Image (cartoon, rainbow, N blue to C red):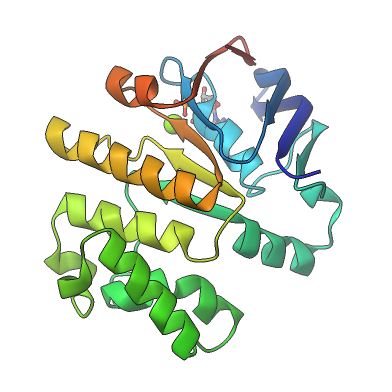
Length: 223
Ligand code: ADP
Ligand code: MG
């Protein structure tokens, strides 16, 4: 079964003696090539949901399947490998490594596996051309604009040809025109690779560009 299946997902946090039920019996199903915008007020649990989908945190109950695999049933080392191969992340602050060049940042998934080879270098170069950064490959992140850093993050997220692309308010720090260009670029690359795109956004324009839209209300997704 290719795609994403989420069933009965629940997650709560306990702070002192207060328990906060952030996600309650949440379900979601997505086929390859689909995109969805997740909207909702600050604090409603959008980032928590993305962390769970990205297997960075585990749920209290419920299950996630990505291409037929339940990542939380994998052993620790296998889970890291699965995440590296199947999931691409784009966060608002980009998490680029400041000491690495643009090209090296895009190849980080390969470096995490061991050394990068010529094939990895070609793939990274190709992605950087697609996001129009071919002339910035030897720059450091600190030498780029916010929009350019965003494009590096997009290129890096696609490096392993992930099944699932997760973006948490990716254009939150960009001006409107740049944000709209990034949205178009992200959708184009997602459709080319037939990945599933789950994007958290406060932008109505960005949300409207996605195939589906869901609001996170009382711990559930309402489409
Ligand atoms: P959003 O991304 O929609 O703004 P979050 O998913 O970041 O919301 O947070 C949802 C709720 O869970 C918030 O009330 C937040 O304070 C709480 N929360 C998030 N992470 C933790 C944590 N690690 N420990 C305790 N509470 C948390
Ligand atoms: Mg958030």
